[in-house]
Image (cartoon, rainbow, N blue to C red; front, side, top):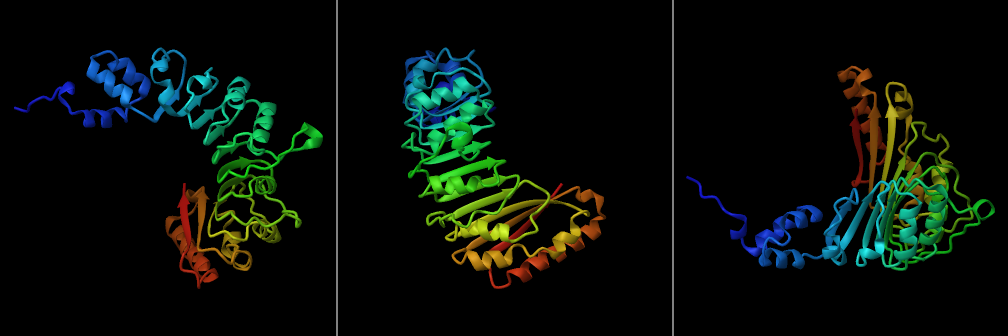
Length: 323
């Protein structure tokens, strides 16, 4: 007969490891004041991760608020950022004016920040101006959606510079947002950029010297036919060492274009002489419209074309997925 092990018989080290996998609010609600030993273990937990879905369960927050290191807030839940005064990593989903204002007032100590799908247009513009004008001097990494270039004429906004920003994850409908970002972040090292359209980058943009890693996603099935769009784009970031490009395509509608596509080989070899690794993700949509054997032949031909385009480059890869 197996012997049952009671929770209180587990060693402290094992209990602490278990506690790290549990929601901190539920943990306190279930175990706080059970006994002095458990209380001491709970109080020893540092760099806590707190996800706020509602205010109904915040009764114990004051007991651990100063030890919350990462705070995630969903939807329009009201919260007081100053209550969690040691937060270094903040994530806001679908936030409104009051939530973003909290960060604008009390968030100068943050090191990483994510603002996903905000629901207040004009407040977000002001917030982005603060981010890209060094109003958050400790901020090193940011994930922002719905970002637009500043426009002094329309919104009386301008970006100066944020020299300490090193990593950005940006999605935007602004086809030239990368110009504003590169100008505002002179020490940017890594950029994840998701656009719905790409236009010609102005020739007067200074090449960025510190950007080494980039993932570029073009969320448009219609791929630009004019390669000079990509030439001017990559001209602004000539020191890239690692590049990922992601594209979606429908078949059989776009099959002919794909078989003639040069995978930007001329642009890349001409403008990115420091590139060490290149991955192209090709995502097929509606692939079930083709016979499987025919589809496999197409994949083989596309793979062959890619290899031929970069036959002297061992660390360049094409990865294909489908739905």
